Image (cartoon, rainbow, N blue to C red; front, side, top):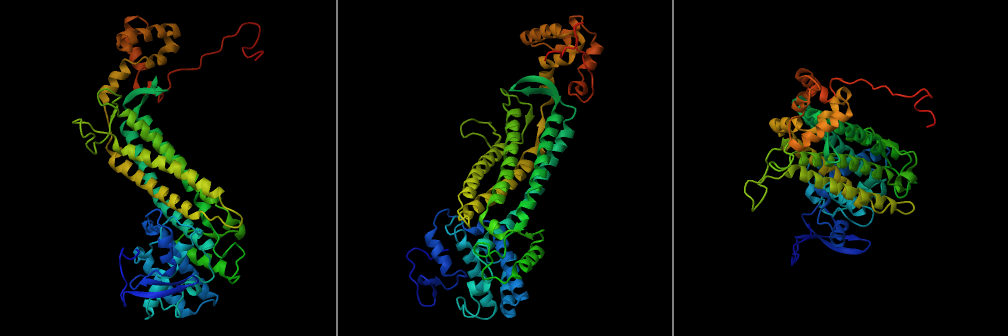
Length: 494
């Protein structure tokens, strides 16, 4: 939100603000101030302002609101100032002035520019609400009042944990909805027999319903693992100020601020037992990133399976049909690609890379502070947002509309040698192997070959090769006893 290139300020178009480095002209209608102006010049990196993550802006407003209430409660700030700061924060929580959060998400200074952007916007809006002009900081000051009892080093990580906690709720909702979608398909396809595969080679039969039920179970497990990470984000270091010693803050401030922040956010928060450790260590963010990566990797594996199962449709597996979402080629008419699973794969790749960045940044901190929390914030906020959206589009635009190619599956199972495995306890391995070879050479139905060989009547074969028995839903075999000679146990000498 810098002035346009070539812009020449006219009197009335700007205001003058001063910091320890000098003076600057600030656009008259801007709610941000001189510290934000310097950040816009210093960090033209990502071309992504912090406002792209609206939940993060909300979280910053929550922290500043809790601070104002705590400061008023302990008498560290005049009540009328606290009321105006509170009113400005509530407007931010109502979605107003988010466009004024203009500093780049990637920045030096451990997040100081983000904190100052918030302080300046809140201060200038509070000034307006009090009947003063923007920049008239003698009445309400961004640092002395809005930032009272605080430092970037406790407000920034606290706000990040609040934002991630709120976004996690939304991610969990979408992940569970996706799990339910796969579960419904598991029920829909429970009667559809298919060939299982290991190492991309034909294996024993299963049902398509079992396969989709397995996907649902996987997602249910990840739902639980992600839910368990909530505690990582519940411990905040508000009141630590610069390095964890609480310098400049009243001893009563931390407990009061945490209490107010918990009420405002609706989260179960607690003060870190060791504020020095909590201020310097980014381990919670690294662990949370790992949980996101685990979920993304497993979701990507499912999408790989969906692409394989739907491959073809004529020269591939062609077992299922994915909903056609877009023309697949600018040169091949009629081609339709699995674009939804593909985009989810790409989200997973990004999250894997983001986790590596978060890990490196967590390691890169020195002494009493990790200066690299902005890059941690960027990639965690991106990962959790992208993962949620990936779950949403996979459910709505893909899984809900999947259908089975039942005739093709029936043909594949009938001629597949894997079904002979179910007969080996009854006809013996040697006979089964011979039939398997014949089935491969002739591509004939296995059941027909068994009957023709006189090994079993049709009725018995049909029963043993029923979908329920082939898929393990109905037990058909018993344990085969171990045969040993008179010299002792077959395990003797092992």
